[in-house]
Amino acid sequence: MAVTTIQSNNKVVKFTQQVNREWVRENLFAPYMGESITSIIRKRMELTSGGEQMNIPLVARLAATAVGSGTLAGNEESVDNYGMRVWIDWARNAVKTNKAEKHKDSAAIFDVARPLLGDWLKELNRDEIIDAFYALPSESAPVGLGSAAGQRVNGILFGDATAAQRNTWVSDNSDRVAFGKLNSNYSATFATATATLDSTDDVFNAANLRFLKRIARAANPKIRPFKTKDGKEYFVAFSGSRTFRDMKSSLDSLNGASRPRENDGVSKNPIFQDGDLLYDGVIIREVPEIDTRAPTFYTTAGASGTTPVRPVWLCGQSAMAMAYGQMAKPTQLDNTDYGFNQGVGIEAAYGLSKMFKKTTGGKLVEWGIATGFYAAVADA
Image (cartoon, rainbow, N blue to C red; front, side, top):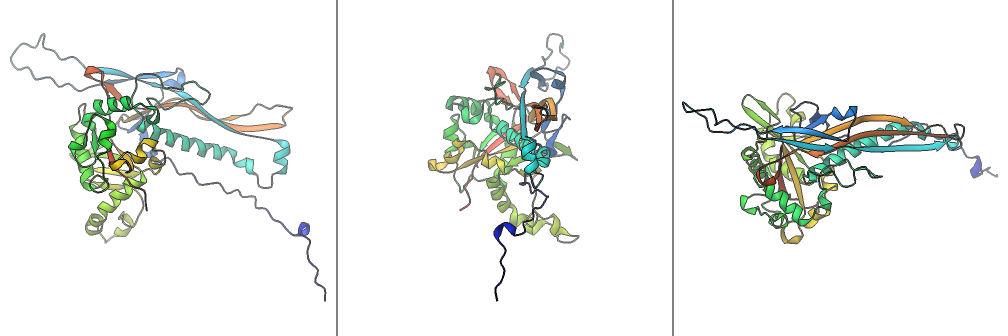
């Protein structure tokens, strides 16, 4: 008995109309961004009415010796102040098609263009915040400002910095950097300091976090804590996945022994749950892209010239400024060729810069950040 077979062109092919979009991680800096002076990443909106650069006034605390019954006239204290500049540039993207291609589309792919563009801008914001943390402060406009690609990250991009510029940065910020476990690891030559970091003593663990926090508290100008409560000071440390891994391992015993087990304690214990770590008044937030966007220098910057190094940024208030010229805005291609071509886009204008102040001797000192450097080997 012959069995009829279906020729391939006659076989049923069904297409789902639902498009599966690649997952995009949310901007993990977002909870610490805001317009308030207490925010770690401060959004500034003054340039939305026009302009290319913004001046942010910074004022140091008064620190003179008190005058008692002596003469005050002529012994007044001057206010130490500085104006920090932030430049903005444009970021744009678009998706274009025409009626012929859209007519062939079985899955309405172009209908998800706008959410795809929104995801693209979220990723760009996150990645450029990381690039700005890596960058070195500069009073000059960023290289590439106004170019075809634009440049929204202010300062000197770490990958473009010379050895001399990196040395100047570590010297200017010597009171707010920590290299692993010991003060003696510090050197005014940046590459020499990172070369002291080994994967035994100089990883990001509980003891080294306490050391970094002491560095932050002793820095001058002062780093204002992210928040204070009942006399307790809290900072936020932004960490890549490698350093976060080492910190989590360091705290496993503590979290296992000290966390409550009653009242659904398991759901709050970081041994079992994903999310931030909290230790010694420091919120430790993992941002995986800190590792993936690390400049090439960090690949072998540690001991023996083979050990990878990663920074951790311990932040207080006003660590970074994000100046907006225009918030994200949807755009549309002007109809061309009698409306046959179609396109949608997105655009925004902003600039990102670590906040810094010029001090005596022309030093550019970061305002709200203490940076720790740690050995951070890749997973075997």
